Length: 131
Image (cartoon, rainbow, N blue to C red; front, side, top):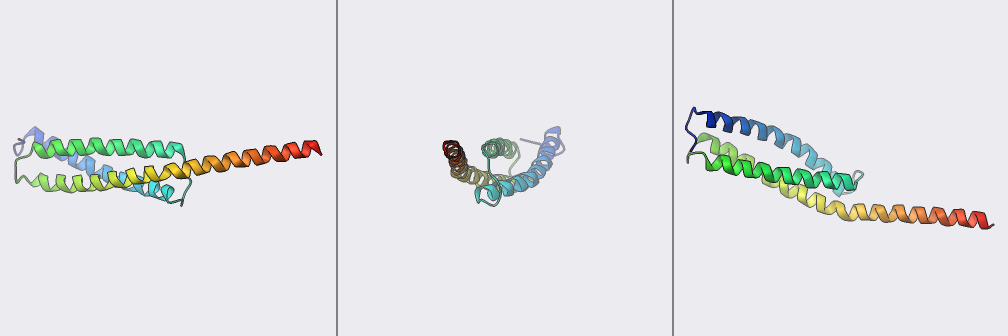
């Protein structure tokens, strides 16, 4: 257990501040992924991979949060902060996972359109050469 005033407590406070800052960053990133998944912005396979990577990082942050909670004595004032962080991380993780999943069909549709445009262009060129 982390004793008040110990180096472990200082380390936990540092992680809390870091996680709170990362949550603000991940919220902005999650908005970008949601916009892409909903068709409001361009989507790409790279963006989908980034969403998956962000989702994994959120999982790692959740594991860290759980370890910090486990190391705190019941009733410790930092537990409340960690539970709030944990809730925010879980919500972000779920949102980003859904967005990454929804990007898949949009990426595939984009590939199909690009393939059809290429085929149409090739057919037009062939028709022009044959005339």
